Length: 433
Image (tube, rainbow, N blue to C red; front, top):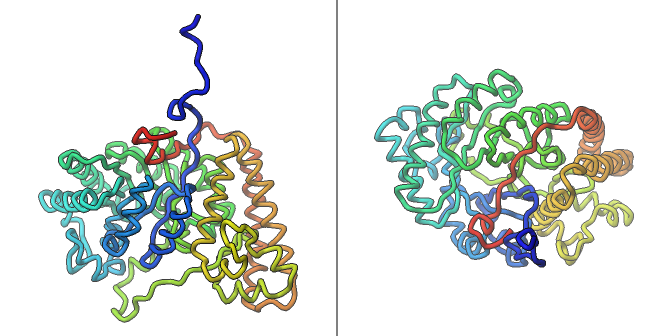
């Protein structure tokens, strides 16, 4: 009898329960100082940081602190843009696996391919990364010649990890257009093909999907993602933000999302396919201000004008969370990166605190419906900036249709599977639940 008795309280590491959905942050060139400040405050809603290979030295201090605080560090080797003329840059050419031109498929054949994968693994191991986005490429579909080459390269990458005697997880980054993901036969062909590829997780980087996705497109994405669950490893939506990002988590289509700091919340690759731009045109995009109640990211000047329209609007849409913005609207606008990530982390934690069976209902009732109502109310306010007014009117129509499509999906038969969420680094290392 006593063998069946469990003494309480149980050790923290022994407690079981569903894994929470994950949030990963893509760190842009100028994001490291704000990220350092955020994690210094004890932020735990973020699982890890994706560091682009060309910025490893620039982000050295952030990487050191993130490792110390048990965040995952994920190396993006940037092979996807490096494989297309418009994505190739001088910074990428300077990487050990780079060339003066964009890559072609022969650059990853045989000994050359093995050398490049070894260089990527060596960079990850030498710089204390915990995971690698595998050196894959943007595909046009299951018949793209890059697919078989990428599968081979994933195997060589795993071999290099084993040879390096480092504890690196390997992620398959599957980048395809949304139109390919939609098609059942092509999707199944991709899933069958990458079943041969060694990996610890699959990250879906779907072109023309992200924070501005329509309800119909989000439903298609959710239904397509369910086919990836059969492998039983974590599935993460890369470059996915906004209401669609929370939606794919709520419906269990993915176990985590990844996006940039107020940008890179949708994936567009049109610029990669074009010839390279003039060397002079190389400026980074500016941070935007997150307005959670409206599900909008706007320029600081637009946010300033909107929140200055009236005391009521300022009180309604200005940040009142003193942990996020101690000085309210001033911090919200002056430090938009911190505000946006803090709020997104709380949104994902809000889903985490809700049982999976109730997430869809709460998401629709407590997130989608209030956004729809607030956008409709703001669209009718007079005296706003003309461009903002037009954006709100369009947003009103978009959110209304989004709400209808997601509600219809919720009323359909419940999903037969839920994506496996990634584990936190400390959990994988046996230091916590």
